[in-house]
Amino acid sequence: MKHAHLGDLDVSRIGLGAMTMAGTYTTEGALDHSESIRTIQRALDLGVTHIDTAEIYGPYLSEKIVGDAIKNRRDEVKIATKFGLVSHAGGGPGITDSSAANIRAAVEGSLHRLGTDHIDLYYQHRVDRNTPIEETADAVAELIAEGKVLHFGLSEASPDTIRRAHAVQPVSALQTEYSLWTRDVEAEILPLLRELGIGFVPYSPLGHGLLTGQIRTVDDFADDDWRKSNPRFIGENFTRNLRIVDEVQAIGAEIGATPAQTALAWILTRGDDIAPIPGTRRVTRVEENTAADSIELSTDQLDRLDSLEPAAGERHDGNNMASIDR
Image (tube, rainbow, N blue to C red):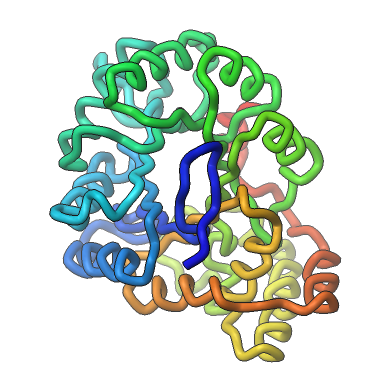
């Protein structure tokens, strides 16, 4: 598999997101942890070197699964995980806290669950409005000096926050949603990242599953599936957004690719400093996604994909959008 560069961190240009292994779209009882472990190990077999997780996923469960899967294969993979959405001072999961003390507590827990002595890429999961980003960056810089963390990342950070953090501790990667139906970052964020030499890690590159072409109705979602409250999956917005899928599917049919492979192949044309992390807990899906590495799109097909109408609706509900640094 070809590689990408996140700052000076070398990773496979298609990674694996481990969020859904902790039940993001599915209730805990429906999860198969052994399948998740096989999925991670199959990804490594296929040349994936970039696994992304976070302490909040589960919470803690996703990191534990990743740790179990990479046991005896640690040198094959770059592990990315995240802090800041679990307060270890008593607030618990869902409480934003990027204070130095909380980062110290978070990193020790993550190292233990992952079964490693260092984290390759350590992200602030969401910007903490109660802690200056300079203090957070300095706390991560201390962990880097100690060898517990190798690279610093930000997630869903604004241009101002990125600049301020980078001035204290160089940022290797920014993680934000990016796909054929979420292209906000192209206006300001991507140019800034390239100015500063920061890599970009798109999460949800398959539009929370919609760009796989497998979803034609939300009626099949479980009652607690958060997509049922996502504006892009509701009412007329959902109907409009299916048109994006139809065009991706049509282009895929021209080249013998699935819609997911077509959507990923498009992202891979955006630069060698971009490394998407499609999430799955299924071996068949990781095989499908990684095959996008070898797909070539023609100039005409790229033009058609580039000109797709933007998705209808906000990318998150009101509460989640309010938590994003903009």
